[in-house]
Length: 353
Length: 164
Image (cartoon, each protein chain N blue to C red):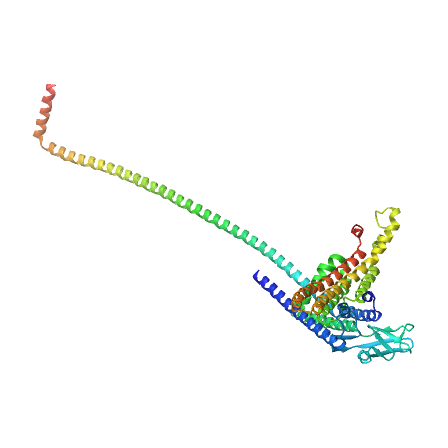
């Protein structure tokens, strides 16, 4: 009893220290950034712009003002073909390079007069901050999971060890509490996707919490893609009952059928939409709250506000940590529920609504 | 709004990276991990089952042992009881026999004594008779040798007879 309490306290303490370092780092970053900006451009502090800048994608990875990692810009236009150059070229050329202009992270072609050429569509496949973060998370995931797989081979038939004992309970949890009860007997087929999904979202949620990290899972492209993959997997594997249920739900009067079709089809598309928006909104909202709190410091420019805000940010960071796990869990849970309802043999699904 | 517009470049990279990730992790991580998890579960389950079976077997053995022990104890008790009965019977028989023997000896002795006594009495009687005869003979022989006294006696006797 005492031991569990002690370990819980230790956990809370370590999380708090973690968050404090986060918020201090973030604050420091903000302070540095904004003061420099103020000094250089004598610009009024715009909290909305600051927040949008932090949660949006960018062609370079800015950790702090002046500490920028340039990333490759990859562009394709029908006229000029494929062009690859460093994002630092834009910084050097004040947002213009080689006939391209970086207009608030949207790259356009410049026409000879120096204005935006709306005729030419620029395909932007740049390794942006989000793509770089995506690649980083993929590398982390591959390294982590192959290490775990190796230690599984090494500790064959023995108790788990090291990082394995951290990942193993999560895999068990996903398999036994999330996937098995919702999908049923044929769960093994979908398990690799669902495990990848869970760990991908989790890792990227956590990476997003690190100061300077990219807001990848709070980007609608990413959540939309994941939701569409879930949608496709669900409907490729859907059985007769599922489709029949859409066309002719049981116990519905014939006159009501057209209305039910509308409802059912709306439901089919509502599911991936809710998946998309839930993850996107949760993560983005968390970032916006933390950034807004920190922004208060630069609006009020007061030590008292700074102290209070630090406490609040600390609290929010702890919550965000929880949300990171929770949202990964919810996305995986709902995906397995959708797959489960589509491959269910019995008519139980009909009564589920 | 800018936040809600999907970016085609990011979508392309996401599809590529996520596809590779799913494929790679499936092949090199989830497959070995899940199979060894399953293996471990199976081995734990079989070990548990074995333990359960062993426990049942142990319980059975124990009950068997108890039964055997109880049987042995009952057997021993019976043997002791039987032996005791036999001993008691033997003692009683021996006692009875001894008593009977003693009685027989006593009665035999009594009989022998009786016979001896009878024989003795007979002998004594015989001896007494012969002694008496001898004495009588001697007496008579002496009496008869003394004629005078015989005559006196006879005369006495006659005189007495006359009186009657």
